[in-house]
Image 1 (tube, rainbow, N blue to C red):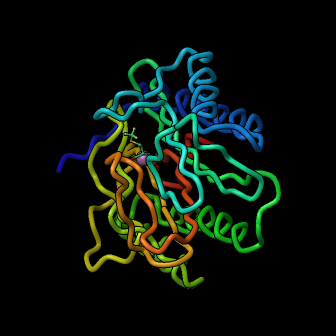
Image 2 (cartoon, rainbow, N blue to C red):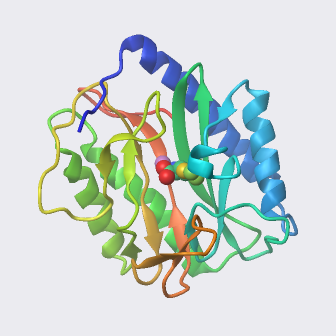
Length: 249
Ligand code: MF3
Ligand code: CO
């Protein structure tokens, strides 16, 4: 395993990529209305990314056919945008996007509500987001990687939710997926020591029911095994000697 440490120049470019991605998520969330197809959502997202002079990193990544992963309700991640998939009031939609700015990547995801949603769904989204913040309390020099995993997993499980185990967060930089892998549930070992200059995409995926997931026949879309709702929250984070810097917020 080789975890890259970024230079000041590289960090500056990743900051810029992160800012653009944060803005992309804000603009995209505002644009989503009941009755839209996930295909339209992807198109709007891609246009926003390109309007800032960035490249959508997911497009054609290992054959993934779109710029934004749009995952509705029991779809966990990597939903493929489709003209015949229409979002309606009450749905929750996970939006995962990546941008490349001057050769450097940022990766972030949000789950948003379409119109009014149930209190249960609101809580799932809120807990998933908060689990990220529980995790990054340990995202600094002096802690180990799995301190983050344990904090995320224990927090989510205290609400009875299932934390997805088959997919993990990851290092990020020139490449979308770098070492290390970052699980979102309690680990038996401590994992690597965190060091200033590491950049990590930390991304809890949390199900209302079982943590078990399955893949649809498109070989991309991940769904919950029991059909329960799922939420996703992700940011690109810079490890420092002090508080972590969340690059994509
Ligand atoms: N955030 C996602 C991940 O880290 C990126 C989607 S990969 C793509 O797995 F293939 F869909 F682009
Ligand atoms: Co990611």
